[in-house]
Image (cartoon, rainbow, N blue to C red; front, side, top):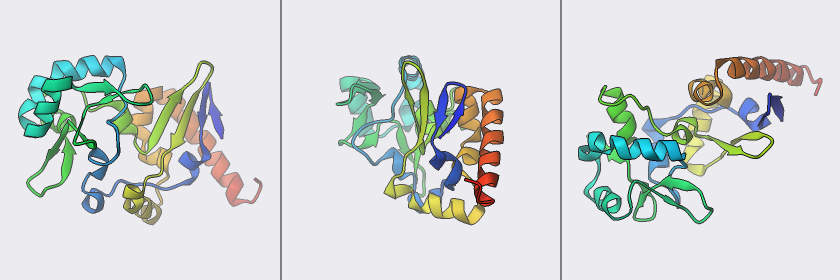
Length: 196
């Protein structure tokens, strides 16, 4: 575990490699699982505000779910998450002409229609953030659908924390990330020299 301020970073985030491989997974993280993406109350309010901008990109089934229960719900673990269709697909999933899943929020952002990129938990994946009264934990979440991303990460030699530079800065700030980067490099060098 590396500690940066009051944030504990799992060594998996530093040691493991990862690069999203959309051509292999086809955006499966948007349509697999038994709950939606974790969001904050602020993101919930923002998603409701942005809904008209992405409405036409959503599937008919997603529109029905949103009409019935809104853009989010509280799951079995008590977390606020995006609503899902048929017990798995995020309501904000849309599909490209090639059938690849994509996030309607991110699509609208890239097209310049909105200024919000996407929920932070999505941007940070495969890292999950857990907040506790005295510290925050940053953990690597392994999921079989991301196996191709692990393979590509090893091939390109990109550590998880480096792949997630932008969302980690979004979450914790540039100064925190720079400190993590330095601590991770020192740790990896020590490990390579057999000092750990």
